[in-house]
Length: 172
Image (tube, rainbow, N blue to C red):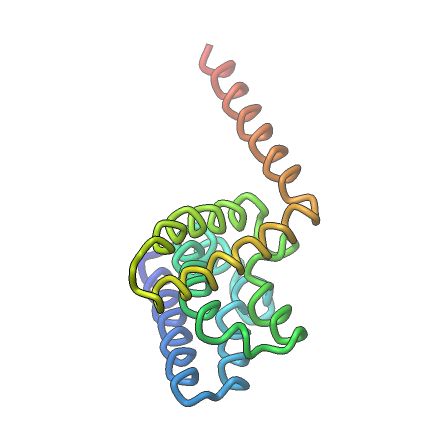
């Protein structure tokens, strides 16, 4: 993973986010959906993107993208999506078959905990925006739990612990 790859992926992600924001201002939901699909493409399109992009996306950019989705898309766009578009263009970012459950759940819980404090603001619009984000976090967390995401997280933690134990034994 080179600095040039990081910069290319950053430019790709930033361009998609700008296009989504511009399409939202034009009320162009179909373009939003297309751009959301493009934003998620490095996660599941190995024929279009190198596997290093998926790794880089998950390690460097995933939390930022999740914050954008839960802070902007969930507030301004998600309600306009059909069920099919929601699954294909929004929920896919949190699908355990594409994104490790530990990463998705961590991003959702982090967003949930930081957004929760914004519900206490006197600004009604900010409160409503926070509530929309929280609603999506809870919905996606429920899906992750129903799909066995918590067990996946526990399994990943146990595997990490086992690797650490093995490493410590090798040092002895």
